[in-house]
Amino acid sequence: MKKYIVDRFEEDFVVLEEETGGSINIKRELLPDANRGDVLTEENGAFIIDEQETLERKKRISEKMNKLFEKKKNL
Image (cartoon, rainbow, N blue to C red; front, side):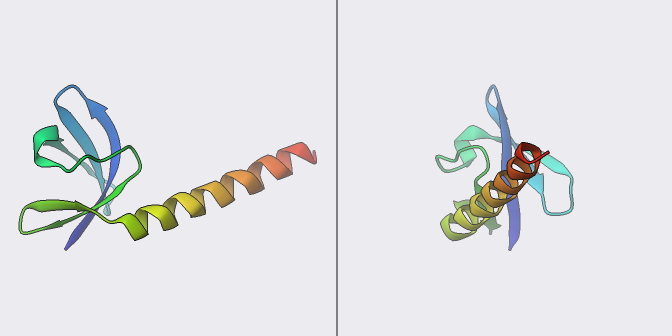
């Protein structure tokens, strides 16, 4: 099972970031109703939003951003 992160939308395509750091373009019609930052898994050619992984990823990013802004505030 491969994992991807929705990076951005470009016209009829969605740019997905691969775990290896590369990226692929997939037609929007082949994906579920995903948003930027969602984690997708691909199995047998079908893409599914991994809700749990998406929430955990967004939480980690939010915590990092809060720490960064706290440091800047204290300078």
